[in-house]
Image (cartoon, rainbow, N blue to C red; front, side, top):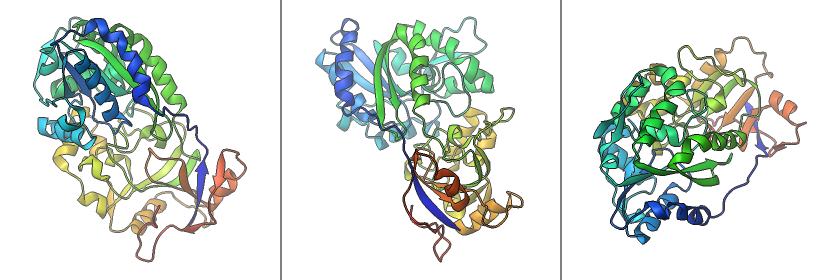
Length: 410
């Protein structure tokens, strides 16, 4: 199988200095910060560009005003639903006392807050509840499970991230309805406690780089977050073709997407009762490896049809299952067919596509669902794409596999 490397011309607009962009915005909090106040900085588990830089800027601002900042993980059940696991994830993203200049206080202890009128209980990290205030920092982006007014962002972090395991379970017990319909009223109850002073929303471009950063005071979050979500959607990358026989994915992981393989890219959501997107239409997905940064968490592996033995051997089941079970979408934790080599995985995947005449295979290879500027395509797709101004052909083609049956270096 011979593939051709092409480049998608994506919008590269980015913030060169996110700290400089954020610094003047922090002045909006001057009247809310008092000397000696204990202020929590809530950070999530995703691989967010410039996350440690932004956390450090907020910490420095708070200390300059005499406050006592500390960092808390706001990531629901992630990290194996343990305090140690969540602290380890923050460390892997460059967030520790030595890098931020403020202590990291990781705990799974949560307290219940008022939830009158809701069909579920609402929880808050005890350390945030006992602090004088909290500032949320999160990327705003399309969610991997559903689409609605609020998806991944500050409202979700307030309700589920800060809710720890109990809060995450409370929402996920209602499945897609809970995510689509209960984030807004649930997060509104969290904001009503007065503990959340502000949220800092980051939006990224198609290259996983900071495009925009904006501080929203507590009373602005619910109103302004949808605008930032719309901005994120406009800058999302996509696959180069709407119909694909086999999608070859070199790697997956939590640092790539909340479910390892982003359904917003593949069109495959993998949740019972939820319809896949009409495009792209991908007949078979094969995935070859897990990233080191995912720490063995293979949530989303069930979105693939075939995986390699290499990937299978790296799965940490306690971490994966804690995340999958909390989400309630068990399909995403099921193990696909396991192939011994990359070549065998491809053969299996192509076989599931039915009769595809030789030479007409529509194949796309990507590094992962986060990096989509440079991709590989088969000859039939190259012929289609060559007429697009947004596509540049980079080489004259190369074999997909080495003699040993491994993928050629990306």
